[in-house]
Amino acid sequence: MNAAVRNTLAFLGGFVVLGVAKYAATALGNAVIPPPPGVDLSTIEGFTAAVPLYEAKQWIPAFLEHAVGSMAAAAAFLAVSHRMKLALGIGALHMVGGIAAALMVPFLAWVVALDLVAMYLPMAWVGGRLGAGPRVS
Image: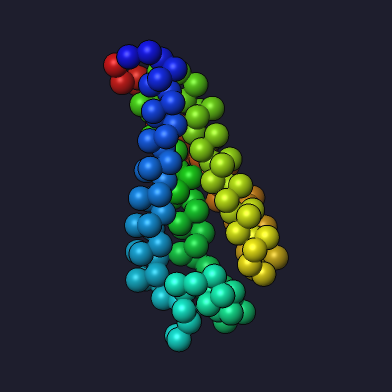
């Protein structure tokens, strides 16, 4: 298979893995540390109304979701070359989504700062390092 095609498929596969990992991390995180009682997280309006009710510990599932999602960029191990670039590219696009969410919902400043600084690109780098093992032929 052509290297460019394989790298493209690895990049797209990274997004599929990212989505599955985010869903699993959210479900697990919210099961362990549930959101405040009575909040509706099924709509953006419900989530926006719930933000002031969150305690610091209740942000852990969101941080976990973003960190695990970016680390899932390790799916770039399927790439023929440029694995770290692919992992960081997936993390960067994931971060763009995080920035968009931060602009739409009035999050607390410390939550946005910690999330943007520590959960996207650094975790994509970790995922890239984890996925930088021997090449798959």
